[in-house]
Amino acid sequence: MKKLYFDVNNGKVIRPRDITTPEYYVTLNEKDKVQEFYTCFSRVKIQQMGNEWLKAQLTIDKIVWSSYTWLINSLVQYIREYSYLTEKQNYEEEYKDHYVYLLCKST
Image (tube, rainbow, N blue to C red; front, top):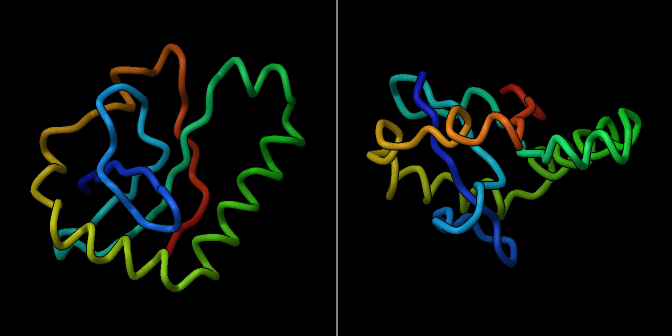
């Protein structure tokens, strides 16, 4: 499966900026269909806030990605435009000491 990283700004999916860790990534199958959504969390923030906070955040993300059709449509357009970036990115491995990506939704 391929990974495609992205951020969300004003309800629209955008390319990640090079100065921050991307907020999300999706795994795509061979036909570029979304399989899973992952959300980025700071390891320090998880330690400070605890597991209940983390579960609540994952639940919110799951609701958002299940409910907001304009966000899904924006993601579909983003995949069409930038699916070629899947082979060039690996933020998860690069920042694993400070950040963790957790599954928030499977399709």
